[in-house]
Length: 86
Image (cartoon, rainbow, N blue to C red; front, side, top):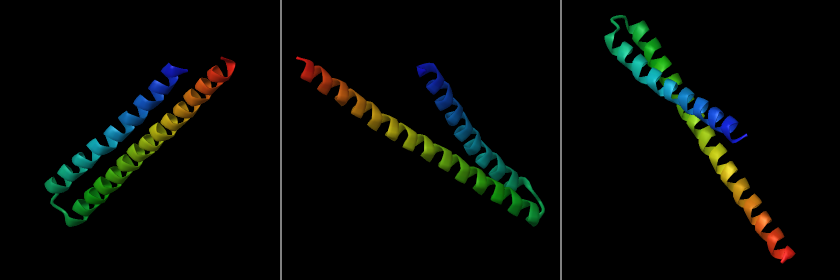
């Protein structure tokens, strides 16, 4: 189960990295475009990619926070059970 979690976490990090890369790529393309309408579309795509990357990263941070809380709660529960046995 641990390896499955690591694969999911890696996939999430890769997705966030791709979104951030697309932000820079679309920004670069907006600088290279000649037509104003095309520039606006590239800037909009860059903004959407940035927001998607930030949201994915935020979800990953929340996931790690929740996982850390549950691990602490489980660990303290195990310690309490061991103390009551002794």
